[in-house]
Image 1: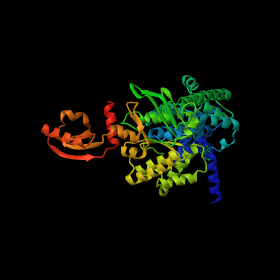
Image 2: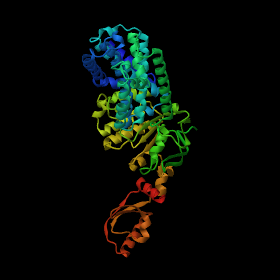
Image 3: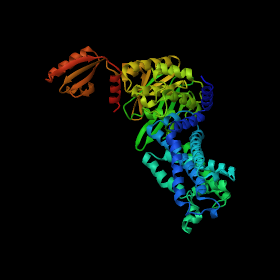
Image 4: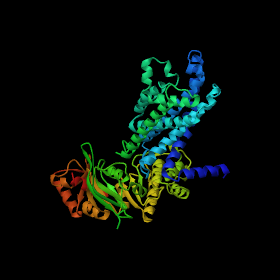
Length: 270
Length: 299
């Protein structure tokens, strides 16, 4: 057995030291086994967005008083959009697949607490979202190298973690709520995708008419993107501290709600 | 003595249906216990409550003294369940499936026991095969393996041999018997009544959410199975013998007889009523007849 294999074996055994870390490991392994679909494909999609939008709109859109190029402006938005969508996709698809195929019973029979179930699913989804986000960031650097000079790295990290936590948690709710793939697709296509696309990924809300500017302020996804972008440029559409407060508040409410759903066994234990 | 399972006044209602209507049951440590009944009798609901998958409306369940709700972490560690549905995770191999299931119970370095399980379930050659590549019978055996990875003192098998061929069924039962001989308590539900008769020391029969018979297998056979059963192919049964019919399949009817003298009386009644006999045979008494008698008498 090679040194690498021994190290991998030690890692797997340490992950299995407790029930919930095994579930976390299983969830990581699950998306890693189909990494073309779960990691490579979303990175490619984000890069295509960048190429097309930056090419078509770079001369027509002015952001932050032209202190940042449109391609550079797009990068944090696309990174965050990828993080959010993939965090959501991981928890929601894992749970609904397990429910529909019936193998969810394997995690309901062991002595895992509701909090352990929640954190295992959510942490794995956060890892996937962040891995995809990092991949998008690295690849898009080739097209917008100026983004590498991150102004406030801790803000970037905070919004990265909070954004992935929130969407992973929404994915848990959607995955438990939905009884069939159709319902999950509706949740994703009619709630998650519109809120993501209308959150300022592709534009600054100052370029919107008054009504849509006001509408953006009730979209929690807007604060995730805007605060994340502030970390990169030190510039934002709204006060970054207000964004942080909104995002933290949203996260606390969602986490509390979801832990309560797990504790009650909502749609899991009949 | 702490019982392996203690169930008190357990009730659960789904809509207008009483899935369980006040069940009391005790299973002693080391027993091989059978839970029988027609579809919808409440067996799976009972097992689901035991496993924490379903919540009771009222009543209590304890596994080796640990309440399945208040002390669920310990109770679930003591229990291994083979579910009725053929479920699997298509992302993983057989070995990964068993290793991950061990990990859920906080067990690391469980390779020796997993190898032993694979051997006893005749799955060693499939250890690295993806679950999707297995036949139905093999998937069923992996389910059995998953229930055993944490060496639970109480093992519940809900229809474990459905879809498993005869030879493998025998090896599976040999393994389960060995576990029972090693001190594991076994609770079995099955539609193969001959399995229950051969394996279970005590049997509970359920119907409409209630236990309608509970005794040792030997006593159930003595009390509810007729000494003799005759299979007779006739157009109709004499009126005074109708209540002796335990089963009908078209014109083939099974009648319970107390002894051979009753066979002569039956033949006389058929002659008296001018009923022609297409075919006649005596069959051994078995649990199936007891089951049908009990289910029939509690209609």
